[in-house]
Amino acid sequence: MKKGIIGKKIGMTQIFDEVGNVIPVTVIEAGPCVVAQKKTAENDGYDAVQLGFIDAKEKQLTKPMKGHFEKAGVGAKKHLKEFRLENAAAMNVGDVITADTFAAGEKVDVTGITKGRGYTGAIKRWNLHKLCATHGVGPIHRQSGSMGVIDPARIFKNKKMAGQYGNEQVTVLNLKVVKIDAERNLIAIKGAIPGAKNGIVFIRDSVKA
Image (cartoon, rainbow, N blue to C red; front, side, top):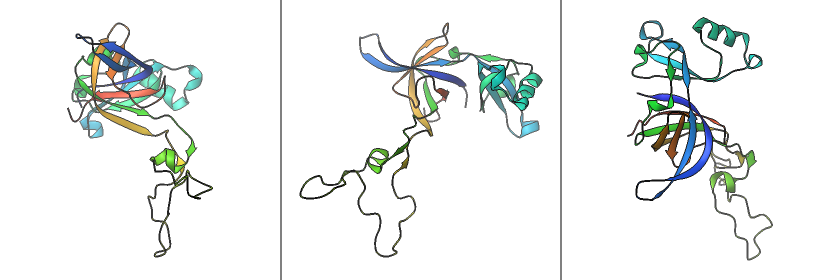
């Protein structure tokens, strides 16, 4: 991993390219992120940095978190994320990473928490077909069909059934960075990304680009 940053999803809009084509983009407020901790191969077995994003209020911190930031000598942050960057060894605690770390045209992977939809049926959760709504079939139509067979007379594991839908971590790969606004710390990425507005996302350079 060469680059990484923490951001907040602002919402979606559209911009036009040089020839007038409409590009749907998601706008992310990326950074500024401060290096709150540095891990080295000598002490931890690998090189990495821990980034902090958004200033935290006093009541949002526990005593261990307060000690963590006081030891680092940086301001308390609300969100922390560790990145195993290739240049982590050259970075120091207190360094600031901004949106201009990335450039327009690059490919990135974005990780976020999807919208929670609560307890939903199998039709919505797994996109299963509905049961026949005519010819006397019913009275229930929005449920899955046969659950199993007579032998072994049980339902196998991983059967697609109703349950909690959403509110899980999802990573979308190979998204294109369309525009960077370094002054306002904004990154416009083509397409949709997981999560609701104001949700926290993690951006890193694409592993498959």
